[in-house]
Length: 238
Image (cartoon, rainbow, N blue to C red; front, side):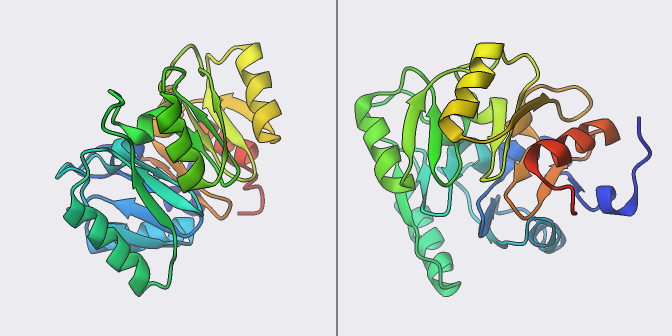
């Protein structure tokens, strides 16, 4: 394992003692959504690492925000079971920060409700679970303002946990096939690499948050894994 320096250590996090930070949080170019119990220190450190504003909320009264929400610079898609009060709280917090983005729920009729697990998106493109309905795809297009494609990564349909995409690059599940990687490169028109997090875990989205300005990884992520994150997502100047 590569010895970690101060810069690396400042980008390693846990939420409620868990290194799977992507399960509990999600980020865009301007925001990171954290669970309600996130400490002020964690929120401040996330803001620094990602250069964003931190907002704390639950989704359907659950703290697994990274599983139940996904967003980009244009909007956020939430679980169909997100409460009206939670949506209003997010809107109020965004308004207070001068941010104007769309918020939508996944349609109730679609049996898949974990938006963060089934949607991989940046500001222009989304790859989604291959079994999503056309109604759901229309909601994603309208809310996130993206072109939407269906596919898998590493044979997994839960593409939101199998990779992380920014506007600079994509880091994908280490078992992604050649065809899957070529497809990602074609639709996103970005460089794509494979890797792992948390000492060999291939579910990149489960322990990595990233935008074009910075990244935050689970605290068990090794120096070699951090190096792959830096290279794949274009952080060589950090």
